[in-house]
Length: 106
Length: 106
DNA sequence: TATGAATATTCATATATATGAATTTAACTA
DNA sequence: TAGTTAAATTCATATATATGAATATTCATA
Image (tube, rainbow over the protein chains, first blue to last red):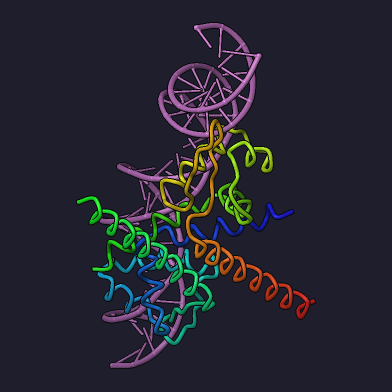
């Protein structure tokens, strides 16, 4: 049955329901970063960033590498970025469509 | 700022956090279907399917067309299916990777 | 081993979501 | 217009998630 895969799919998508996690994902686009890097660049409390990173790691969206006191996080699979980009395009297209509609009405 | 787009992106991803909605999306892959079609093919109560379709429609994942007593639902943008497919591939790849790992250990 | 810097965890609370049951609304047809 | 089928809504309840504050853990180095 596909049931199990739908559940797993739903589960991993929960990762993407937080703006902060999406921001983290976007920041990791260019390569690996430490927890502190991410806390600074987002302006979010370190503890909270760490919590979000835990969610990302538990769902295999990121992988980690420890180097001394630092832990480096990176995107586990480039297809994740592709999927995110596609959804962003869908949003942009919809916004553009609504804008066109608004102009036509006015 | 990107903040708004992250929030919108997070919002639309909430749609994909339900196995039932993912199943509905997959059933709509081949073309439009009525609420009843979907209720039958999933074995889910009509009211519940309708609730999920409301979520899908509110987030512009599907569009509707009424024909008499029937309401036909279809995927609003093919990129949504592409994004879903990519995430599914990520899952499959991860499963395959874990399987390989399991074999190597045993 | 004591200190400091980097990460992670726990806990309490507020908020959001999913579901079934019951009801309502909408549209067709006899 | 009464009855029927299709779809949507409301409501109550159970469950999940996000957050900040406080605390703990990990690792390097003096």
